[in-house]
Amino acid sequence: MKTGSRIGFLDECGFSERPTVCRTWAPKGQTPIIRSTGSWRTRSVIGLLTATPRGGRPKFYLRIFKTTIHDTQIIRFLKETRRHIRGRLILLWDGLAAHRSKRTLAFLKTQRHWLSVERFPPYAPELNPVEYPWSSAKRTRLANFSPDSVAMLDARIRSYARTVRRRPKLLQGFLKTSSLFA
Image (cartoon, rainbow, N blue to C red; front, side):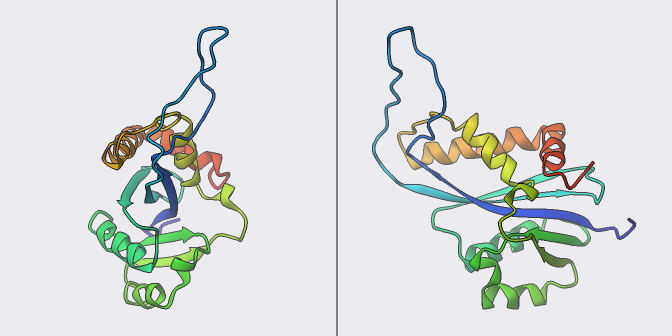
């Protein structure tokens, strides 16, 4: 494929101060205890995984938001991400209401010179490679993590994103796991 375009996969995820409980260990006979502040404050995250049409040169972009994801956040993320993407981008995403809003659709019409958008089929999250970094984060870096503040949660999310960005083989693994790339 010689379109000169990159393919991008976008998805949103939520994280909270309440720990995602995964298996843990403790000495025999002692039940492991994960302490929590009891707070339920959350962060919403938008992630974008881009690659060449054959899955080469993957890149991962992430933005943390204090509110839930609406069209305002989607548009802001796309504007901010545009600075980092050279050439055209074919964006694939799910059917989130914020992706289909009038404001988002109007914005997308003004971006046709560099951005074209396609939707994943409904109920097919396994096709979206960005689902896999979220799953990985919740099973590794954020598993059993109970921050004292949302600032600590933000720092841990950013730390995870930096780790993923520095590991192109891991990003390629996410692409291949989606079964869209050989």
